[in-house]
Amino acid sequence: MCLAIPARVVELMDEDMARVDLGGVRKEISLALVDEVALGDYVIVHVGYALSKLDPDEAEKTLALFAESGLDLQAIAEGSA
Amino acid sequence: MKYVDEFRDGEVAATLAEAIAREADTGRRYAFMEFCGGHTHAISRYGVTDLLPANVRMIHGPGCPVCVLPIGRIDMAIRLVLERPEVILCTYGDCLRVPASDRLSLLKAKARGGDVRMVYSAADALALARKHPEREVVFFAIGFETTTPPTALVIKQAQLMGLANFSVICNHVLTPSAIMTILESPEVRELGTVPLDGFVGPAHVSTIIGSRPYAFFAEEYRKPVVIAGFEPLDVMQAIRMLIRQVNEGRAEVENEFTRAVSEEGNLKAQALVSEVFELRRSFEWRGLREVPYSALRIRAAFAAQDAERKFDLAFTPVPDNKACECGAILRGVKKPTDCKIFGTVCTPENPMGSCMVSSEGACAAHYNYGRFRDVPVVAA
Ligand code: SF4
Image (cartoon, rainbow over all chains, first blue to last red; front, side, top):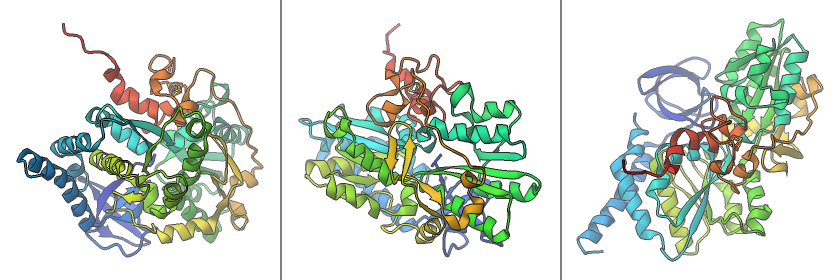
């Protein structure tokens, strides 16, 4: 029920609507709940509405944090941690 | 898919699992509740439990709106659609199969002649009302803070359009009150049957309300909260962050889902919600009973769109099916397999309780992805 997915905005339309791409599937959604969405932005879509924009920099940072857990493992293996 | 696949990477999951095992203190036990059904789903589907050390236990919480909706609310919708042929009742797909009184569900009410329809969004419900001006279109709206803003929007639009044949049965509930009820429950406070060291906080709910509303739990109840995305790596990272907090004796709100959640949340959506809705003094939840100030109702300024006023609908509480353990599961006291009819009488095709209905319900998640884990592997 609360599942929602990140989708890329591929077309901005009238009346706060937009067309998004969800892994190859195109869908019309509403942007009425979010401000300043630009073409190419990723938004989190739930029941036909964008709930928030997705911040690509923050996504990178989170992935980098995951990668760090691998790094400290390596450090342990090499005896430097 | 970008921003999905990277957060499901198996190799990264393995390193995160090792990091968790390294950080978890073997001398103690950790119990964390994932509040959201979305997390429950991810944990079951990707086998996250199998990647955790034995002393780290995940407890399913009540965070699936379909699961916590009490029978009496569905009965209300069924009565309306069966008694009034002019009504088209529309709702999200998951609500249709929730068992109600007299062995009915909205789907079975449809088979009895009620005009029940499924919609994908609140906008579809509004469109239905515009298409059928001669009928009364009633939207049975459910959900946590994620689905509330779209409902608020269509109510406002209906008023602006002067659409007299559109109204809403509002069943929207609030996450923070539910978390508080769990923390105040005797199982957690007095009996200690549900040990709770922290929460994996809601993902999409938090995109709307932000991370701030959880600060209260961290401060007042000394429980760490880590808001996490719904992908398996997000959940694992959140567990790792919770373990760290526990080890260091901290109780803070941390945000793993910074790519979509800010501290203040979506202010535009919040403003819209408070314009259209106000707090209900009390609302019944399945499993948690009556919870004060835990749900929303439509403000008097939008009375014309409030189906409960318009059709004078009354809520009658109904006890759950005796065999069903949904209530205890929603409070974290029992597991799906503790229910005698799990997987035999009660299956996703023929659910007896609400936890088996939506894919985010604890019983459905365990049935679909986890039930063979319970079967011991025997060499042939
Ligand atoms: S198995 Fe079915 S009846 Fe039992 S607790 Fe789960 S949903 Fe309820």
